[in-house]
Image 1 (tube, rainbow, N blue to C red):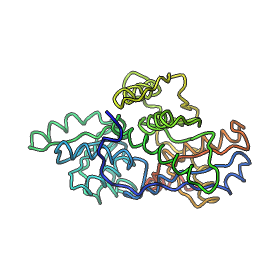
Image 2: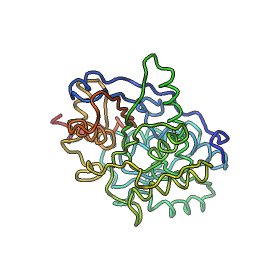
Image 3: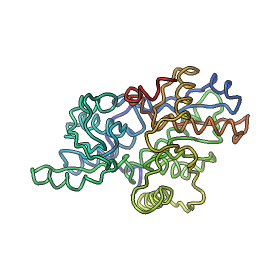
Image 4: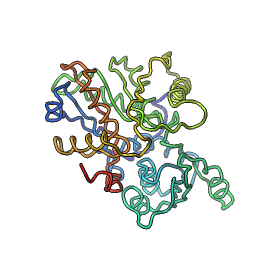
Length: 332
C-alpha cells in the first residue's frame, strides 16, 4: 500500500505555523525553542487528531458507514475532534467516555454535545472497552458503525503524521531562516503521532531526535506502551511498504513526567501552562501539552540540550480542557 494512494477528507487548515518562542527561550536560558502549532488545525478549536481523522473518516465514508464510534476520557480532545469531523461529514457519532455524567458539561464535553454526539458513560473504562457491545447494539438497529480506535491510533491514523513530518520538512526548506531541529518533543499517549513522526523521519532521512513524553501510565493490554508503540511502527511500516528496521531501543520515550497519572495536574503542568501563557500568549492543556512542555522545560534546566541548538515542541492542542480544570489551575 502506498501512502500517496490513500484517500483523505479535508477537515483541517494546513500547514500549521511554526513560531519561535523567543521570550520563553530567553527565560529558560537554554536552546532556542520553536513550536509547531497543531492547536491551530481549525477543526473544533484545533488539535493533532484532525490529521489522523482526515484519513480515518475518509475510510469510514469509503466503507459506507453511517456513524462512528470512539472512546476516551470525559475531556478527550480526540473525541471532541471526532464529533466535529463526523458532524461535518453528516455521520452520526457515539462517544464512549470514562467516568460519570456531570451535573453540568464544560470544556470538551460541552463541545461534544454541541456537535450532536451521543454520549455513553463507561465508568472506569475510558479506553474503549465497551465499544464491542455498542457496535452490536447499533448493528441491531440497522446502523453501519465505523470504530475509530482510541486516540485515532492505528496505521490509518499514523499516515496523518507521516504526512505531517513531510509538511514540517517543506516548511524548514522554505523558511527565510535556516531551520534545523536537533530534537522534536511532543506528548506521546496512544501512539499514532509518535509512530508517524518516526516513520516520516525515516522516509525523509531526517536527523532530529524524536522525543515523546509519555503522558499515561495506564497500559492497554499486557504489553508496555513502548512495546505497543514499537508494534504499531512495525505494523505500519509493513502495511505501507516502508523499509524501516528500527528497534525498540532506538525509540525515545520519556517516562519521567507521568506524575500522579493521567489527567492529574501537578506543579509541573501548572508551571508549564503559566510560562507559555505569560511569556508567549500560547495556551497549553492540562493533560497532554502541559505535561509534555513541563518535561521539556525540566530537560532544558538539566542541560540535556545544547544551548545553541533548535528544539521543536509539537503543540498537539487541547486548550478546551483548560476550563474543566479550573480548580487545579487556580494557583497558576
